[in-house]
Length: 259
Image 1 (cartoon, rainbow, N blue to C red):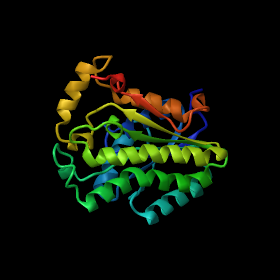
Image 2: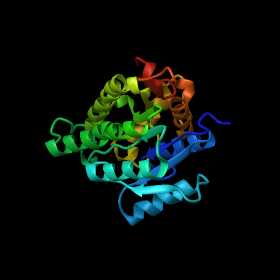
Image 3: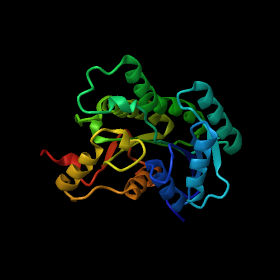
Image 4: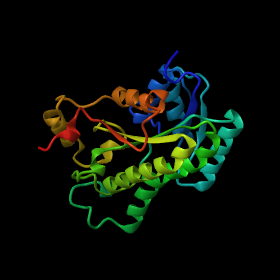
């Protein structure tokens, strides 16, 4: 019996086997969960995500295309979840986007309106949009999880508009926790330290961030995806049944440091 035995839910955000969402799914599957998955529209993305999921030992995954920026796509996917599973117990939201041309040191102030609003929509609003649809297929309560980064709390060179969007995501999480608590739906965030993923490599100066954390974090190292995965499994399990509205840092302790 694992922590997640008998629970099923949706994991959004696997791109390849370096993704945080991949590590979370790995931990959930190990603990006995049944996971459904989405991929960005297109045959190339389907092949990539299917390959990653199959490498976790899932021979025939529930896998649907979904553009989280489309209400029609969200409606379709959650309707299919309800039709196929009846109810779910958890949601993993591990998606974010900002135009990489504006993720460089010194270009935050002139960020165009379209770039700003797109980052807010995909990185923050979609979490609320998924929660709104998930609540009706969580009749026994459940747990929601999103992924953030320290750049939501402090200014990190090059993180720019993504930091603003992640700050909005963290505020969204608190309001969701307040409103959905009466349904026994918990909402938490894991703020992972820097990790080489497809999205993080779009941030200018990312290698310098990795080097700095390794020097300054109390554990004197960067994190692994598995560490985020295991903390996420805890937050999605009944072991954390009294925890909601929180941001849990998995960053080798870097966030406690003043200098």
